[in-house]
Image (cartoon, rainbow, N blue to C red; front, side, top):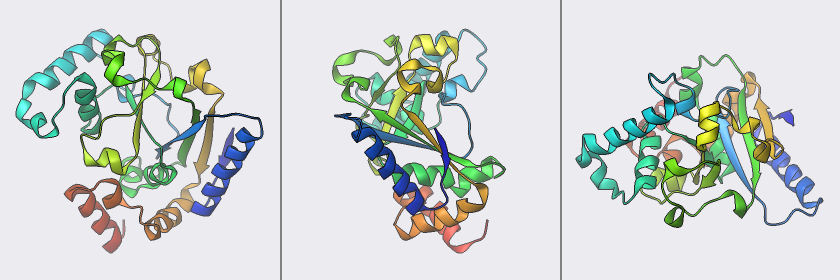
Length: 243
């Protein structure tokens, strides 16, 4: 399913409509996740959007080990206690991982889709995209009891510990590509488990700035999403200067 949205109001109406559509079919125990993208790219984690110099799974493990080893002082302030915490930190600081970012918050996803910074990186030459996914508790694992991230054969979701404030502000959730999906290089859309539950909304290029302004009125902007100096500076640049 693929439809266009042209305003925040339109977006919220579509969400409400889809939720009613699901509830009318007697679905219970479902929740929604949202992912905003500045362009219509595949639902693949960063590690699958790069070309590995060695076997992909070997490269992942070696890179992760070096990430933990290289400078512990950089990681210590976040009090990482296990490999899930380290993987979460790596994802937020740009390490190629098997994680894909999602959010419980629909407006957060809309901000990411329409973010000027993200749009600039992609030369603002395409429609932005919001992905919506219905999930149940069966799609999530408990990282306290599951084991290590790299032991996963199937793709699932998890909620990270709040080791960085932006995780809380963004209502962050991750999908975790399993080893089989990594070897095959496939998207969530290629997985029978999730494909039928995904909905795509597109935002035409000429409505992106309007939606970004509407989000700002609602208090959703760079500093609310990234509650650090970097986010504050991005927000102030957007507020006082033209792109």
